[in-house]
Image 1 (tube, rainbow, N blue to C red):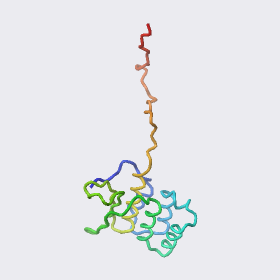
Image 2: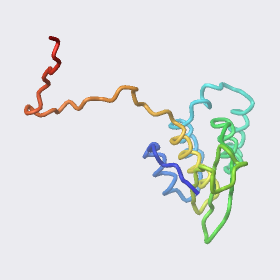
Image 3: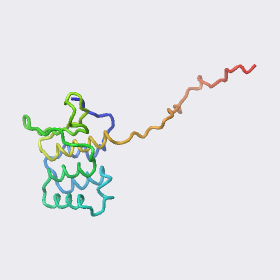
Image 4: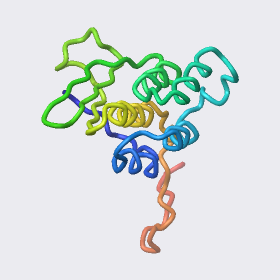
Length: 155
């Protein structure tokens, strides 16, 4: 299975998810504040109200899945498995493809909601548009030895 890791996710929240032992309301609200665009702008829609109710009742797994549904509707849970003391969560854009053809994001953690949230953060980072221009940049530290010279013969 191919794991996408081309772009870096916000280091702070990713490290906090990896080091956490359990989800807390503060951790989840920090994650929403740092990575979610639709949640704050959705106002009091039904989906955001549901996520807030789930956070209030400490239903962390359901809140994580609802957050994926709100923020990344094109991504779906492909697989959740428990193996040797860790939860493995795989998110995919195309679940119908065979697993060996699918480009999914996989994360693991000892806590199920944290495994889902880690996969969510990594999928958000992988789906973020690249901030590259269409024209390559010229390095600003060109040596004095390399000076541009015109070599066209207009005669």
